[in-house]
Length: 175
Image 1 (tube, rainbow, N blue to C red):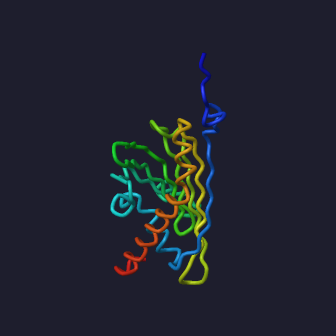
Image 2 (cartoon, one colour):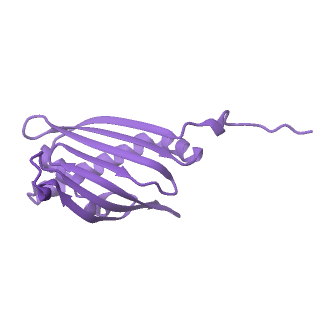
């Protein structure tokens, strides 16, 4: 009688995993951009769609007498949302001052997993290169399609927000 029309061929076989990498040069010293990225508990103050951000626990490798470079581990909880969609996720965040911020997030109703890493490299005294890498798997194909359509805009907006935060830190002379 009737045939079913498919608008999205192989929709059921969409790869739910994504990797996104971006490199950007910013006109702020490494210490300033690192401070903005490492201050997870302040994200809800300046990032769009971030409804709340908390650091639940903090531990330094200096507490256990380690001789490795100073490293701090945070247990965090962030809630993001827009309109009627929202989700919380917990993360283990590793901070290597002025070099790297690395986070591994727990699954939630939208994400199977999320790993993101920020690397910072100085370019003189007043600029730095940011290398951002996101590695994640979403739980359904519709969200993958939304990400694929919006990723450049979303990441650009977040990077701009971090740069505006750096301007605020610089104006307050926080380095």
